Length: 101
Image (cartoon, rainbow, N blue to C red):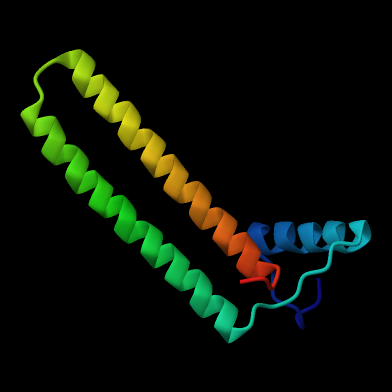
């Protein structure tokens, strides 16, 4: 080993292997613009706020329900809402990354 180069962590080595694999496969990566970064951050913040709102409403509804079947239905509805919001967020972010956003 030469003393010119510091030792690399396993994470750095893994990232180099992945970058080389992507390059060999023809995958191009382009850095995000500041506008894209801001739009992605806005999409994430909006989604987090909506999820927090849904969670508060969900807990509020749960406090009023005693029947286990109704509670299960409310839980399922909350999970669907949460998954939909996350899916929408991911789709928006992907659109922004591709330059359409």
